[in-house]
Length: 265
Image 1 (cartoon, rainbow, N blue to C red):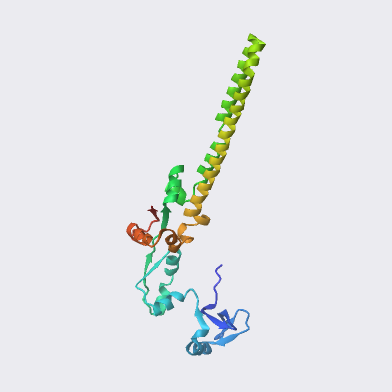
Image 2: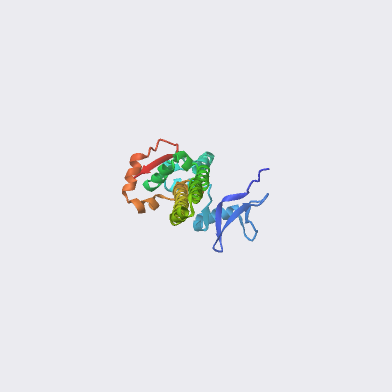
């Protein structure tokens, strides 16, 4: 069931605190939630005129007061603001105010060069990055590294052939076998060395790959949110300078209400 809040759309400052006023049932009186303060309708009207600083508007009245003090022809807003404003037409009509035109703001991701390199290196699509669909590909890459048996199989095959060579040499005579042993030991050592280097490099590459993917995610979808919800323009301007604004104005289409990606070099 719906619960109707009987509070009015104004806050009252009482003892340096902002408190909400509620309509008392069957009475022309407003009270605070804990009922430690009450005021009649007439007293409320008088105080609004004589001491307006004791009152502040709530979220419903904010647009009305804002557009009364600073009339707007157009209000540019995001999806949440537009959904909210769309419910206020009757409120504007009640206060005999003209409602401004509501225009969707541009939705944008700034795709910097450092992230473009990572994206191309891993062959991620823009959609996969924006929609946070990298986990499956990242996991598959990790599994590929872990399943890499080539060097292990190679080392085992080489050592097996060395043992076979030693066995054949022993059949020809102890002197021949003994003459080969120093070289066999060196080759065996080098095979292990090659294997260790290979596996170490694989491990390093895997670590670098994970770090790069994390950088990409943190830069394009920080905190698993759209970039524009976390970083504002000034964050990027500190890195790229004021010329970034002209590039945004050049590339961004304000009539395109779909999400746009700006590739910035």
